[in-house]
Structure formats: C-alpha cells, structure tokens
Image 1: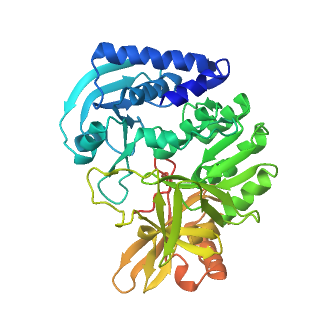
Image 2: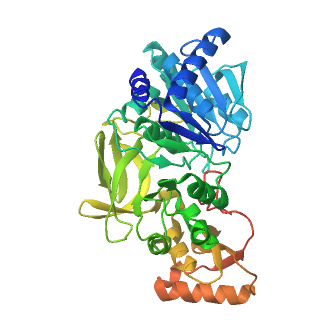
Image 3: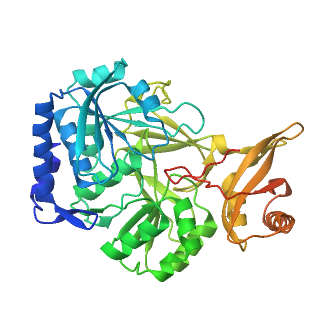
Length: 446
C-alpha cells in the first residue's frame, strides 16, 4: 500500500475529502494514516487480526481502513444501514477487534471482541503476510455470503493513475462498489464528497454545493431522482459523468436521463463483489448495450449466461462453495444478449419469472410501467400459481391516489400493447413501502 501513500504525497495540498463542509488535504490524509498506525500499535492490534469497522464515509474512516491494510490486518467494513445483521456477519467471519466511529465519523472507539471462526482461506492469506477485506452479499436469496479479498490485490488495480475527479461514493462502505469507488477517486488524486444519507435530496444538494463531477448511482436511485424533479430545481451543471450499475437499467429511465442531462456522459458499469469492477463502454446510441472487460478481465457467454475470469477475483467465500470453474471462470448468474462485442444484461437468473414455461424478465415489464403517468416506482416479481407455475405481479407506488381498478386497466393495457400477453401483470398491488434495499437496489419479492 506504500505506493498509494507515495502518490498522495505528490498532491499534498490538494483536497482529498469534503466532509460536512470541511476539506481534508492529501497531506492530512497521510498524517491520519500514520496516526492510526500509532494507535494500532498502542492498542496491540496485530497483523492478521480481523478488525470490524462500523462507520459511514468520512476521512478518518477511510484513513483507518488504509492504515489497517498497511498494517496487514483483515478489514471487515460494516455500515449502520447494513443489509446484513452485525452479529450474523461477525459469526461467519470471526472477529478480533471492533472499531466504532461516532455518527460524524470523527472519533473511533477500539474494543477487543474475540469471535472465533477458522477459515483455511484466511489462514493462507495471513501466512502470506497479506492484508484482507471481508465483505458480505445482501443475502436476498438466503444466508449472506462472506467474500474474502486480498486487499493489496484490489488496490493494485489502481496503480495506473487516471484523471482526477470530484465524486460522491454512492454505494456504502460495506459494498465492494463503495470500496472500489473510494480507491478509484483517491488513487487518481481526486476528491471524495461525502453525503449524510443516500436520499435524492442529500445527494443532489451535495452535487450543487460541492460541484461534484461524477455521480455513480443505481438505476433505482436515478429513476427516483428524475421523478423528484430536483435536477431541474438545483444547479447540477457541474456533473460531467453519471455511471449506473448493480442492477438492470430501465430503457425508459436511461432515455429520460439523457434528455435531462444532455451534456453529461452516461456510462453503464458492471462488476460483482466476487470478481471486481470491469472497465466498460456504453454504446453511443443511447441503448443498454455495453462492452465490458479491460486489463485483468476476460469474459465469455455460455448458454446466455455471462462468465468472467479476473485477476482481481475474491479468494473465495468463507461460508459457501466456490462459484469458479476449474479454469477460474466465475458464473455471474446474469442472463445476457450478445451483439458483436456488446452485451445487454437482461437480469439475474434468480429473478426470471416462469409463466407456463415462458420466461419473463422483471426489468422489461417495469420499463413499460415506468413510462405511464402517475407512477413513482414499480417492482415486478413472480408469485406461485398452481397451473402456470408463476404469475407476474406488479407492485407500484403512485405520485397521487388513483382508483385501483383504473390503474390495473392502464397497466395491463400498456403491457399488452408492448409485450407478449403472458408478460402482462396478472396482479397489481399499490404499495407505499420502499422497493429498495439500503444499497438502493430493487427488491423483487413478496
């Protein structure tokens, strides 16, 4: 990790963070990392020990994580809005130390918390004298999986310096995409702008106030942002690039985004906690076709499923069988279409709805419904049916009240006009609940 600190030293006076209106320079970041190195020695934290860090983004939090990596520890980032319960996570990973930051991310409290959990992969990493990173899947389809990475290997992806930018790390610190974003911004000597929460208001106000250039977000968040109209009421002209990933983007949202931000580059990204984030290039026709790969990554499509081989892949799961084949290829479980060098992501295999043997991808139905008036958001899912296997169910939230029968007729008519009849929702449910996890990903379950 020393190469990263050496790079920071070349930009000592430049802003590394803007947090709660205060600027932290790269010189101050180096000083904080060195300071935490002294704290780790004083507390007695040893190389190879597992250290859980409960916090959100703040300069001190990132500095501690980098200090732990330099120290050779195994870092377990946790957030207060985690999709995985703290006790459940630590029971899987094990723990030696627990560090909790105050809500402002300024003061850290260290405490011994011995939780025994032996893993051959962790032992091998410690024996090699390498720092580690343990992250957890959302567990949306069962028990969360503990994912072990070599921290040094993740950071090495950013040795090649890229253009500096000012960006908001939208994904949480306990998400691979969040760690990847912070490393990408700081390794390029850009500026990390933190937000108090991931609400549309907080994010848009931060863009306007701190002149953010890059917004990495989820399609669900961007759909809500467009519906809110805040992009018209606040000055977001500093934005030069919006990236989107982690779930399928509705074409209707992408088209509206292009119209709302005509001078902004819209880039689809693709990555998984298990293999890392690939370089991507969206096709310039405003469609959802994207080319993915880059140095250290190989891709191929088998029976319509995307497989990836990565130099930055996880070492493995701590509590689940490997998803890699004998040649190191990872099954993403993402169904795709192929057009030359480009792919279009249709959805996760686990999300596909089977209606009498016919496949329905939730995103294609959601795309049609989002085009309709008075729709704030929608989540499409499958529900068991004794004859058909499953039926299509649409859960919708509305901008203003509307008679349910009128809404059902509008939705079914629109879907039948644009899709095969079996893809039209057999059931429509009006709901005020959020359709998203704390990671701003769509939840498609009853």
